[in-house]
Length: 298
Image 1 (spheres, rainbow, N blue to C red):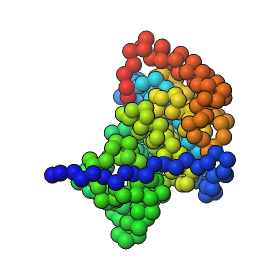
Image 2: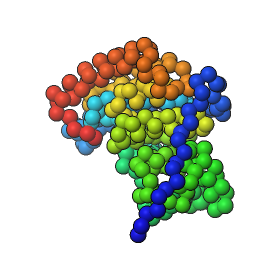
Image 3: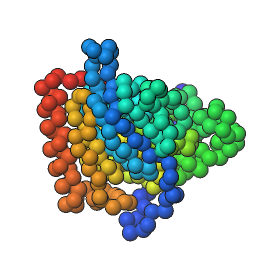
Image 4: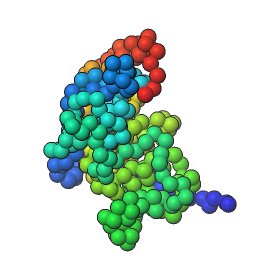
């Protein structure tokens, strides 16, 4: 089958830095992790992955989690999503306990949507079919409503013109954008992003960062973002949580006071470099410990 040339997906347009960002009022999506512990295997002989971990993910902000490979970052994300149980402690979303005493595994739900490293689009469905699929299957929208909303959201995300193409016919960076739009179709309280740009080259990654911020400014959904890329963490995040090597718990939490909206000019500022130096020093200490312990990704 021959593949026809694609219409170019429109570039993400960053809001001008001198303009106020118009965002909806935020009253949802706050996560509180309280004294969370995760042990893989038997309690007395298992692997302690998360050790009495406590921190907040403020509603309507981007919280970025960094730390050595295998430290337990994805374990925490999976516990929020409802894929893994906790051994003890609790996780709360707004006023609801997702898991805790008497309920150590959260129920997965459309209020918490995961965008995985390797992607999860249906290759046999067009891009717009992928985006509209969830609300139709859940019975939350009619087919016409779902496709109307999908078209509008694709246009807002710079994806006009690729509605009828398949995921295999677009670049990996554009596929990432389609996945995020598909997640937002469910109107989640929080997006859980596990190194979504890990496989992208640096140039594509920089475009995707701006695209993600553009989507964030328009939707103001809470984002829990895992990465090993320190520049990515500071550029995107309102807050950066630096984790210890396994067992995982916060070593340092940085509130990134660089004003939003942001564009790539902030990378050359003194304040950005200060955050980079502080983050790199903290992560390096933990990376040395992880290397000495021979940690592997978990």
